[in-house]
Image 1 (cartoon, one colour):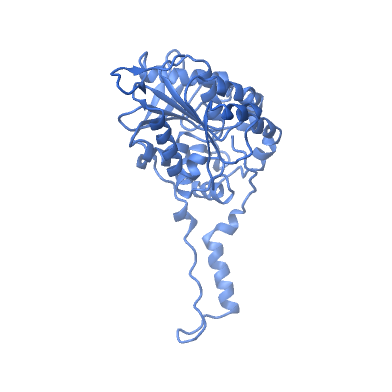
Image 2 (image 1 turned 90 degrees about the vertical axis):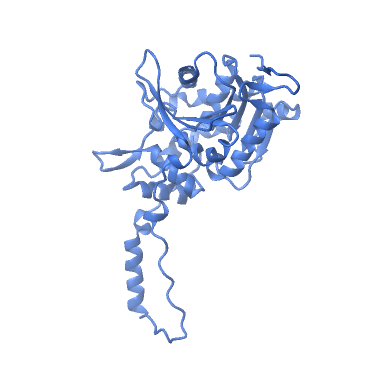
Length: 357
């Protein structure tokens, strides 16, 4: 879930027309000087927001998209896919984001592994019977259902990658020990202690966001200038799928109604640290800050139970703000733990070893 305290930016100050009007007023006060004058020329207007923040297509990063229909239900989960060989890096986004949150990093990861980025229920292009049931149990069941529908009873080696809320889902999926081919897990910027402490402020943070956007470009611009995302290109890809057009209001609004799912928030993070440490697979924790570990994780790290990397100069969405560094960390994690297309590879053996679940 997005945890940045964002303030609204007046759209009027961002319009090119306003900039031109301001320039005309300045010209009246200070008429343009002659080309032969020694005074410096007036600086040309900045690049229009309509060009700088125009949406980018996902096709420049993923190879294809699919709708995964779940048998005996009306649930249809949207996934983006890339790569042709190696283990499957199965990506789970945070609350209010979408699978395209991993778009820019995918363009590099797919050189060494396959990538599947899923729109969780209530998000992106996914359609489910109950869009507001964001309980961790339901979302775990969704992940298992999608994996079953995509790979049947013989899934390839899976490396779960989860950001924020998606990190919680990844941990709960792994802790169930019901996925024999699970070979590794990467959790992105979520720690139980910090997450639990922030829940009391979450409704206020959600309500303080700008709620309506006249265009996709305005929404992308606000997400960057407001601080929730720091990479313009990533925002251009990921932000449009987090919105929907409201015909009654004649504007864009948020696709996911996070403020109506408060009853599930504690379940996302309660007991997360112990569950994370109990998973018998290679684990990597990526953090955007240094003072985030609670007692259980601090002890676990000292005991060498997981690898931790603090990523500098990034916000909460590490995979969006620093996609190249994020992709390198994922690729190095796979290489370091010798995770092949069928599991952990043991040098000298022709068979691959599947971690015991």
